[in-house]
Each structure stands twice: as C-alpha cells, then as structure tokens.
Amino acid sequence: MPNPFGDNWQTLVSSEYYKMDEENKRHYHAAMATFYRKQVKQAVNPRKAGQAPPATDDQIRGLRELLRFHGRQARRLREREIRPNKKDYYSLEEEEDRVLIKPTYDAVERIPHTTKEMYDKYTREQKIKYWGRLTNQLRAEYGRKHPKAMLPHRMRHRMEAYPNYTPPFEGDESNQTEFKDAYKHRDVSEYYDFTDEEKRKYHHRMRDRDSGKSRNFHHKMVKRITESNINLPTYPTPEAEREAEEE
Figure: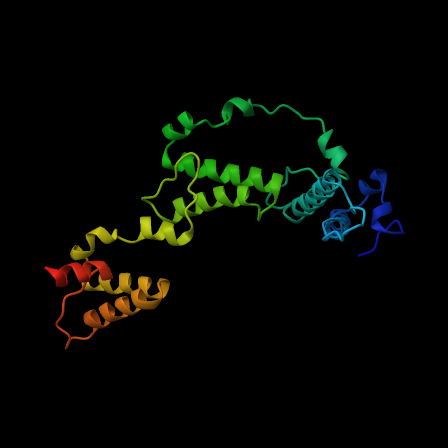
C-alpha cells in the first residue's frame, strides 16, 4: 500500500504518522522493516580485498536496531486486539523518549529481577512464567532466532511438555537428542529391567543414530526381540554382548 501522503514511505514525518489509521501505520512499519532488512543485507555482504568496508560494525548494529524497531511496531499493530495497551511509535527515538506513567502498583517490586536464590524457591508454575518472561524480553532485544532468545523458549517448552523436568537457573544447553535420552527415555543402565517394547524402542533409536558395526548390532537385537523363533538373549551394547560371551 502506498504512502497516503505521497512519495515514498521513507519521507513520512511524525505529524503525518499520527494522522494515519492503524492499517496505514502497519504498512509503514512493514515497508520500513523491509527497507532496513535490505540495508542490513547490503552492509554485511562479504567485503572484497582492497575495497572499503560498506559499513562499520556500529552502523550495522544501528541498522539492525531500526529493523527490529519497525518489526516490533508492525507486530504491535497486528496484535492490537489481544494487546490493546501496547502503544505504537513513529520512530525509535520517540519510543526511547516516551513518557513512562507509573502504574498503580510498583512493577519493579512486583516482578523483581530474578536471582538464582529466588529461582530455586519458585514454584513450578512460577518457573514456567519466568522462562516465558525471559523469552519475550530477549526476543525483543535480539530477535526470535537468536540463541539467547531460543534457550529460555526451549526451557519453557520442555517444562510444559515434561512434568518431571525442571531446568537449572542457568538453563539447559543439551540438544533435543541428549534431552530425550535423559528425561524421556529410561537410562540404559536399567536395560535388563526394560520390557520387550522398551528394549525394541531403545535399539531402534540407537540403530537410527549409530553407524557401521554398532548399527548392525542394534538391528540384530531388534530381530531377536521381534521374531518369536529367535530365542537368544539381548544386550544393551556390543561391549556388553562381548563380555557375556567371554564369561
């Protein structure tokens, strides 16, 4: 949608912005986000030998901050129905210079900066809310895909999906495979207490994860479990099988 005041969206001034309806405001921020996204892409292109850098690191940071600002404002306007109290701003400077009205309660005291000692005393529900708040805070600062924002999101999701899981205050850096091995599946040290179904699933996982001789071993164990005419023992690892044969 074009600028209703004519010319490009980049020429829009503050007084014109606040005269527009929300749909035009949203188009303005979306257009500016696209504009700065292209600027960032151009600024970080690989630099050829002998050429002057297209932008300094500080300039690139500034462009990214403007990109995040316009993306944030466009999102506020799209989500107006569910977040009616989120105010939109024409520019990053206006957002930073906004007049803060003190709420009816002291927000700093009501939701203080969380320390490890506080976190350890939280209930499970409070910990889930903590990871949710931290996710929103870091997404606004770094973007949705930044590792710093993805870690608290992963912690909250894991707590909601696994009732027996509670991450430490520093977060849990384990990948999805490591996490499932630790919290979803029984420890392999309990292998000989597994049911046949648990053994089959274990060997299937290991077969799909391993390669070479180890993969062949787990395939052999699956056959022993699933084929009723094979009356042979099963083992958790090739090493355990060799030790049993040497006894």
